[in-house]
Image 1 (cartoon, rainbow, N blue to C red):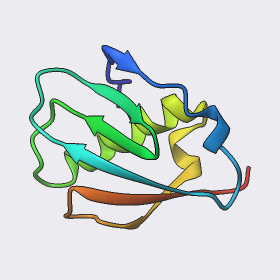
Image 2: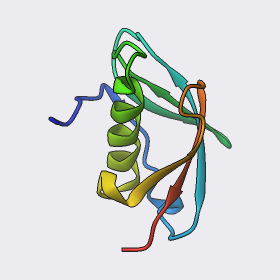
Image 3: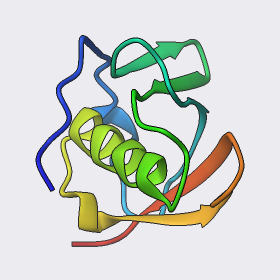
Image 4: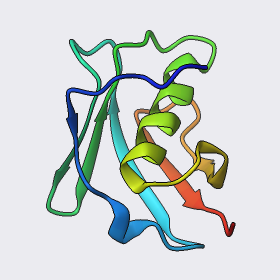
Length: 92
């Protein structure tokens, strides 16, 4: 899958520690792709429609890019069908 282009990309490299849990709030069908950080809250906006796991895959790709990691190092822990998702950073 191609990397989704993002209009705004927050630097989340400080969270890229093995074993760390990253909880995000997802907005599907947004006007543009973005990763926004507002204090402790991380918002991920994706243009993808939430069907068949497509939006979750794009969220994982954008979040990995913001963390400076490969998407394969992020594992979805909770929220496969929810707007609130928790990812875990796996060791390299």
